[in-house]
Image 1: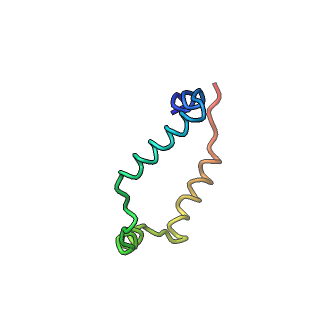
Image 2 (image 1 turned 135 degrees about the vertical axis):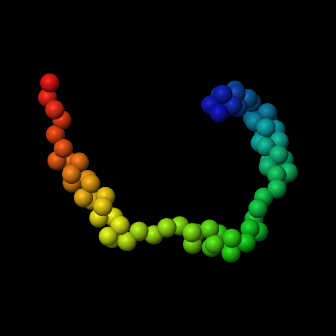
Image 3 (image 1 turned 45 degrees about the horizontal axis):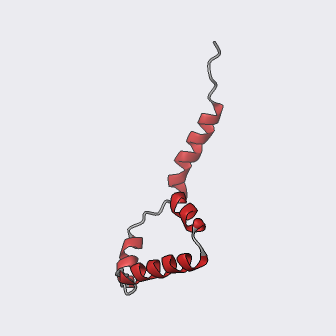
Length: 74
């Protein structure tokens, strides 16, 4: 990507405008999903798991035990 940027900076003002116009043209040809139904997103987000405080306690206890662990000296 930095290659493209370096080349773009080497162009004069009119050539840069031509590149910008061409990019706008390419972007306008792409199909966009602007009208994606919200219900699909809602269903997807409802599948995200939630953790209770007791579920997280396992990690807290492991963290405490890990901090107490001592490395053997040679």
